Structures are given as structure tokens and as C-alpha cells.
Length: 145
Image (cartoon, rainbow, N blue to C red):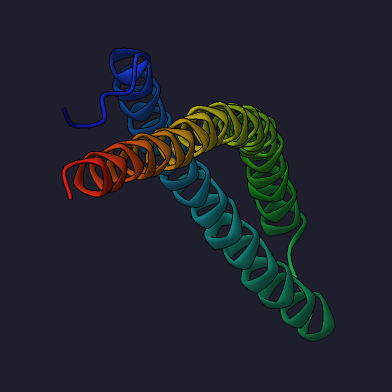
């Protein structure tokens, strides 16, 4: 008779949950990286535009151009604020998915440990039964002499 873990189906369900959680975490991480990259690029654009603005101010600039620069910088800042909000939401989502993944991993480890312990007990019990059987065989051989 071979070893059969009574909670094997539960273990398999936990493994599937962990795999699903890993996929969700990977997707959340990817989303965070995409939004953070967009934010970085926008910040870089704003920085370049500000340096261009500073150069134009040093060389002299018309009031109309000054107003244009200011309007564009305000638009950049609005976009940055918007992306910062989405970056924060993506970060929170990623952290939540990571916590769920850790929980699923711990849950799976519990069942794997239970399976390991049950298997070790099964092996010990099998050895004990085998020893009893060997003792009986030895006694029968001694009696039959």
C-alpha cells in the first residue's frame, strides 16, 4: 500500500491559488513599472522644458512667450500630479498582491509540511510493521526447527 496524503486535493488547490497569486503579482508589478516609467519620462520632459525656459529667460523673452512657457509648465505639472496618483495606486495594488502572495505561499508551505510529516509517520509505521512481520517470521522459523 502506497502513501496517500488525505489532504492532497487541498494541497493542489493551495498550489493553484499560489500560482494565480504569482501571476497577479507579476501583472501588478508590470503595471506599476509602466506607470512609473511614464511618470519618469514626463518628469524628464518637464525638466528639459524648464532648462529651455531658463535659457530663454537669460537671453531675453517676450511676455507672450513667457506666458506660453508658464502654461505649458502648468500642464506638465497637472499631468505629473495625475500620474503620481496612478503610480501610488499601482504601488498600493502591487504591495497588496505581494502580501497576498506571501500569505498563499505560507499557506502552501503549511500543507507541504503536513504532507512531509504524514509521509515520515507513514514510513516509520511501515518500518515498524515490517519489523513486527520479520520478528514473527523469525519466531516461526525458530519454532519449526
